Image (tube, rainbow, N blue to C red; front, side, top):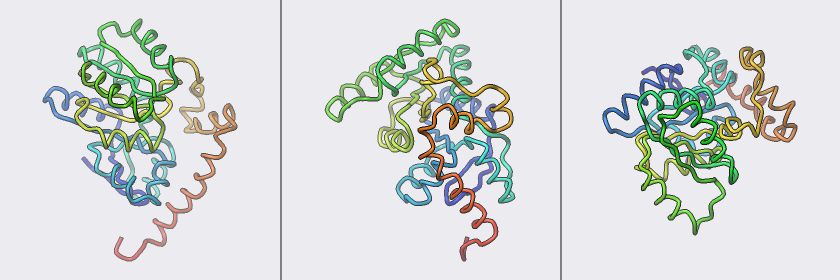
Length: 243
């Protein structure tokens, strides 16, 4: 598998099909695979946080999540196959899980959201065994929640705690599932609580713009994008000695 580094973070050149193949291979062999979906915001944070960067780079698969990652890869001369968003990969996982009869545990979002996802997904994917727990657990409640996951014995653990919390949590709790992945706000979208961008925005790589328009509160998070772009250009044209 080819990979590159963007601001010190490893990005694997994989497409959606490659990711699903890796998941199927891992589960069939009874192995473990930790997946990180790396978007520009996470990559920028990791450049300034060595601990987070180590967590990401030690994952079994680091997926190029977002048009900004695809752009950076091309600018640096190492084009990736395609962008693989967390929501698209999650949707693909549900499809494959229904075909193989895999068990999925959903961890995250506000109370009631993951349950809503289960009700909706069970209609289209009746062969999947599903369980969940919200993401608003306290430190005192965490051991009982972890035991709930262990008792369910999922093949796949989807963690929607928000980045980078979900990446740290996933790294700190190995062995809960064969495949584990942070999915950000995917549960909110899948439950219908948050509307996903129309196809024209997604196909043109402007899904981030739609989210910004529909959720003005995201502006504080999006301010890192210009800094990310500048850092990528610096890596391209003014690389540090030894890099």
